[in-house]
Amino acid sequence: MKVELNNNFDEIISSNSKVLVDFYADWCGPCKMVSPLVAQIADEHDDIAVLKINVDDEMALAGRFKVASIPTIILFKDGVEAKKNIGAMTKADLEAFIAD
Image (cartoon, rainbow, N blue to C red; front, side, top):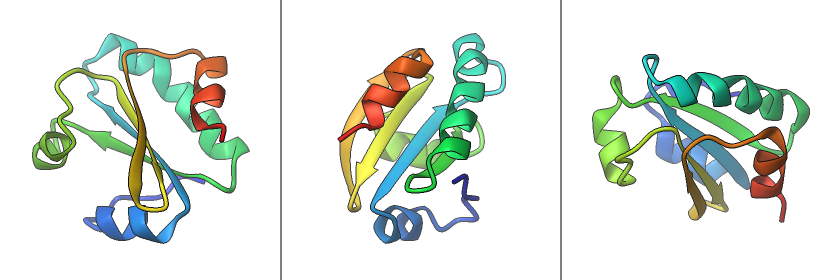
């Protein structure tokens, strides 16, 4: 399920058991390859909240999670950062990434 940021990042992270966060930029080639895969994950997994964070618009948030390269994908479980991946991923990689 895709959710909108609307300045409530901490609330979203703490109120969902699993949250997949995709840090990206519109100009980033690898981000453009990963973006449709993240959208598929959002459509196929109702138990996971999915956020897409544009690092150009949310520099402070990207800095808070030490995002220095994009795409960076972070999985939060019960409000805590559980996994982080830097760089492009395949759909199979993403599925494995979110699996328990």
